Image (cartoon, rainbow, N blue to C red; front, side, top):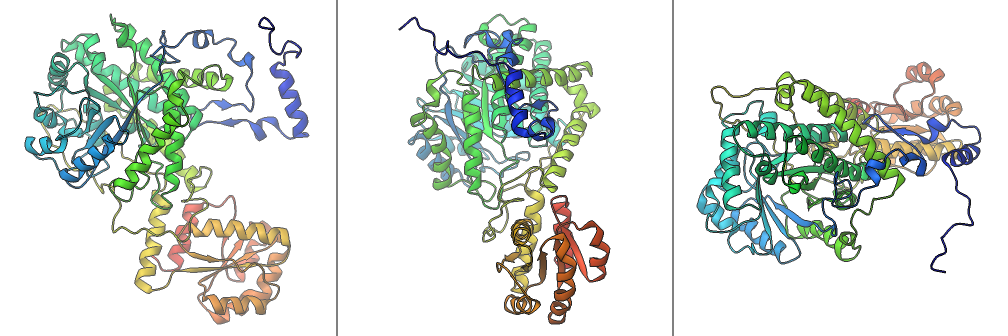
Length: 628
């Protein structure tokens, strides 16, 4: 029995057989249009993957964990990671209290966001060595690592670190990020960076002074492949510049940490982390690293900021969960989950507890940390790891051909690519081709922003300019929900000022199937703007609709019916309703192309349907309502 091979009674099934079966089920529908989709990276995702898809990828699939090129892991027997929590409290004492609370409840890496002029968060007001001492006072450094997000203030924080303690963690210093956010390097030079790294290397060999931060690109709108390529190109530039300044490649590698964003594309993100290890091992080997550990990309990951929403913030818990899973399965060494309400306010005990419990659950209930590279052997994941590796390498080589990261940044090449990708994302979000749940699709109409301002920096501060500094175009952050949130906040302000929330009355009439479908669509479409949408179920006569308008005092009515019936219902009903409210706005759900001119002549102002430009339509309706 022990020698019996499983499934020997079943004949092997090749890819062609699977495709034939799928095409049979499609009953003549186009296979490519129905089931194949293209990523923002430009490669196609198939509906089924088989062994045939990885037959030519032995370089990727034949290696064990802990062996070059480290696709599976840089570690042979463990998949464990540090649970990191970042704090941005408005006071030193509160940040210290919350950090101690976190350390006592499963967190193994403490991060402090220091008040600075670059980060999207405002940060903790640390203005002296005494403040820093109070911030880290009482933390169990034998149990937790210490990290900072201080941006342009990193050298200052470095100078204040207690030299008598032995620390493990990371300073988070990324001069190229400062350059790209402010458009100039200021006093942040390779010489200054070298001094910091050499000090750490000689005194605290497990404290990494240099971070390469992918959120610079991802939160600016880049694709996953671009994020990976630009991050590796920046790391490569650091190595080259520091080598020329006299550091050894192994010392540089030991001081370098990759800090990646984790986006919502679950499987592609897993593949990204695998690809990052592969490509970094290849790159650093070309620099002549002697230590095998230098080939190991140290990956820290944080949930993305660009897709966190201000409205329906509980949905951010779900986003954070899938993103953290991607990082864990992808083999990251450190993972940080932002609090679900971080767009609204600084983290408190409750939101921080929920954030860290996501990771504690993955470890202690799902045991994700017990299996090295659980993605291995998946035909799909191995295939997209190969695709992302090749695409990122292609972009990386373009950057190198332009003279390297700095030259590409000075020429605006990196900024241009990110701008183009961002524009596509903004268009997809505006047209709802890309969904942000609770914001541009399925909004919670009862939700209101309870804070006076969001927990976001309005504009970057100015950093000191020096002679001979590097200058370039900047990369601005963007958030996926910002456009809709701006509209909704204006609606809330209007309602507070006038004492009345703009109200939409749906008019479901006629054909049962069409009126229900279009009523659901209209409610979802218009509620994203913060309007109150009322669905009465059905109206059979103009008199019923008139009574409904009287009861609701609506500002907008939406005809929800079939294209064939809509002209008749508008003829019989809209004029009656306009007598009650001469400023009433009429909308038709649908796109009855042949009747549009006729309907406009009867007073209909807007048509909403799946091809509508969602964001611009809502802005136009809002303008018509007098909301500025």
